[in-house]
Image (cartoon, rainbow, N blue to C red; front, side, top):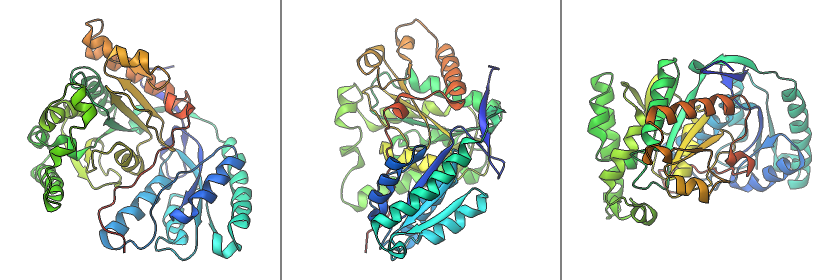
Length: 388
């Protein structure tokens, strides 16, 4: 295989997927169990459980809607069956209407219109089965890394994170960007104390101002609750792993951004409008940030961890990178790449970064990650408003 290339699925809108899923997208929590049963019946489909979709208003409604649409629009998805109840705030037809703009196959099933759960499952399964067969006829083509949007994330960090896996991911981010691709930095909570470093690298003053603004807004959310964000971050596991303060954790997390200019700051689940390094405003909670980046179009995610986590996505293959060799051995069924060799002096950051780039090429071409093999289909939306 040629360096910095992969075999992907070209979509009708010109974007490239690294997977060929048929997504059963429930727009309301009431429909998630029916969606799950369709995936059990029809091979080649994926779905997710969530607690959202009704009695949401304002910016909270808009963010959840943007997430649903973004997940369905992700190039890793061939086609979508949008499954609704019928009376919810997030109407299935409205979500499907936005998804139709991508020119991928999209159909709607309503539990109430079909006459109940069993008939909805039957109808959804028939549509999904047809889509899966159509998807199976799609063939991969050789693509450049310029087609990729890489999500970067660290969860269950330890004292090695900022010394091994995160800098190696930073090297990868620079390489992807050099090839014309895009790298997403997320976890606003875990950039508190390091925001000045990113603002100094901003492409212009507007980007620098927004970088500082999202940090201030994140801190203010905790203050409005009458608590210090640092009471929950670093987590007990982070502290046990050797991290003492949020600022220390942030300085290590920021190394995932590499060294290129920050091109833009995105809202949660917003698709990048520019190539290069972008920052998505997400919480530090692993599942919510993973969902946000995937809804923003990330086809693949690099997830570093020092404590260990099985986290994965129903849509985007998630490459797990251990920060230390002990974890790689202990949780071998969850880890894809070991960056602990940097700590041991056996490899350089660049050498581990090169191994990660090779892993990206293989995974983007079809190799399954450990999280995919274990069906770790985690999904969670960052809520920014109350339910009414």
